[in-house]
Image (cartoon, rainbow, N blue to C red; front, side, top):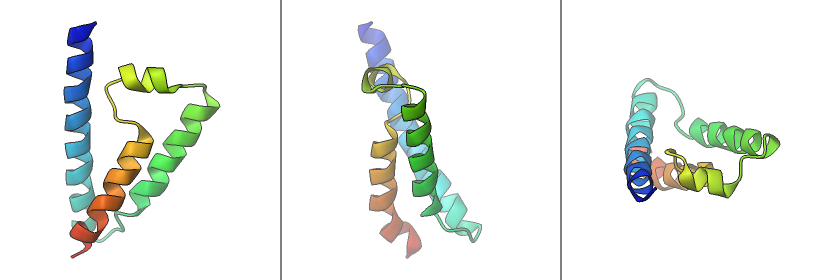
Length: 81
């Protein structure tokens, strides 16, 4: 179990890095990277509808959508310049 948790934390870091690159690519293609916030909000609603709790998210290999939203909000001013 310990190795799985360590691997999942590494995977979450990779997912955040992927989000960062994706935002830059979206911006470079002429689209609004802020739309990612809406997408993560929709994912969050779907998780709630299907009863996916914080324990599942903690054990999963993707960051919480709320964390991904905060990451996007932090990066938007940088990416838009």
